[in-house]
Length: 306
Image 1 (tube, helix red, strand yellow):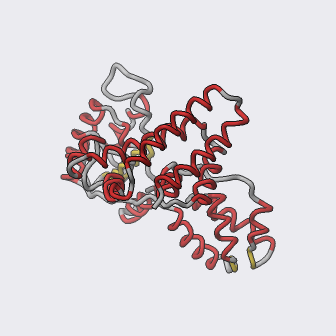
Image 2: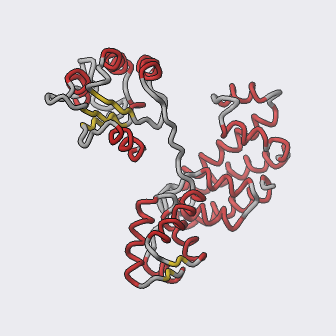
Image 3: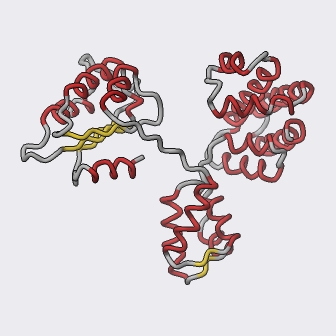
């Protein structure tokens, strides 16, 4: 998103712009309409440059704006001189309605897809070629496992590995880097849905490098709940309403499309196993937590996998 924002400013011949980070919605409550970190947006949108050039302002995490703030900023945007100022709003969620409406009327919306591991693998191949490196297939796999979709970290790793020569091997990567990526949890549930025990166990190990076992249990329970609701829902619209999503949303469609592949007996056994694992983790020594989750993961791969 930042790269795309830079392109917008470059197209407007703006070399330097003011960046404003929106704090979390529950942070720094203020008696005024704008919290302190946001007050600079008023002169930024009203004034423009003193020397006649177009000025720029970048508002980061716009989805965190509170409703009164969105109303004030919407009014500023509506009155702003587009010849004098270019504003870019970055958001990874829904922008409050008052501002979203004005931005739609006066601006342009650009969607930036989140990079997945398969995208990172393609990026890695091109980045290695740009650096005149020969990346062995196993080395690329290990790099993506180590750094996930963090292309900045992957680029730094390639720069460091280039010092050792033009060929990058899996052994060189494994010997130099020991960290694991902080991965999204849905990678684990996707592996379970595929019945891929080896991949599911690796995803579990990756997550436990950063996360708590109870977080894993909570997420898995949520996935089983969604599958159970999909199994009894009369249609996709009803299911979407039950889970608070849109029928067109990918997570909703994915679970709905898989509903016929899951037996009710498998869902029941999964819920019972989750309850036993929850009790085990809350009462047994910490050394047993990992093996408990590993056994649960393998069982769910066999019950829910296709």
